[in-house]
Length: 335
Image (cartoon, rainbow, N blue to C red):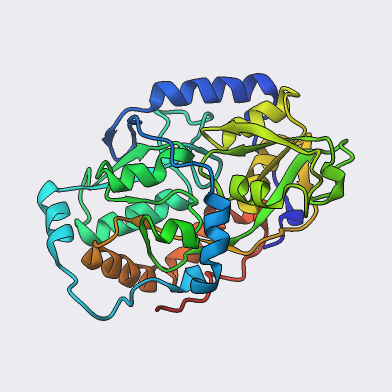
């Protein structure tokens, strides 16, 4: 999946005005409703000082965080967590509503705008298996980047399926499924920019990232070493899409985010492009509450079956146009 193979652009999304309207509408749409609608509740900011240092300190104990999930074929598959979800009659999933092709509302829809995308397909498949294929079996709750972990810990959602990277720091706070998507951090900047990638060309540049994101952790850790100390990384926003709006408005010079998300944003706005190659290897996972062993194992079993055909079907529907042909889902190992 090479982001340089961008092949399509989103009609109706490009431009500063359109993106600003989309972001404004996102706040209005953030209401909890069954299946096709969502709600956004308040929460605490998961970001804090010392995150990057904490991740580095744990690196030796957690060399492959994507391989730390529980096996799907042992342990109870219908424990108290799953029984509670079945009793409720629906699965509550934290998602994004602004990430084009992953979890978003299509502004060009002729009917009521509903959530759709690669992550939404996966969340629906999990609900179908756990609750059963019936109407209103999943509630989507829109959650900002920096509220994903608190939402899980506080029980506001059963899980988060929201382009969430598995890393060692987060494994200390929540549990993850086995990985369902591979990506890496990249730089997004205007095509006319002199920025070449995640390197010395970021000197003196204003860089935007999302609070509670891997991008912010990486920027803090690399400032003064991998990237010049003169780079300004002070622009931190609640939602990753806000960075694209800041870039379009000229308030920042570059965005650092997951390469998959960056490619989708480049598809929305033909005036921007990815700069350089991905500089990390990262994996998205379904995040759940620590200790919810039955749910973790059940989700991993669902993913075993999902990877056989449905994964590729969803990829072809939502992501092939912006990311090109896939190599299939990532290889999986369990601890």
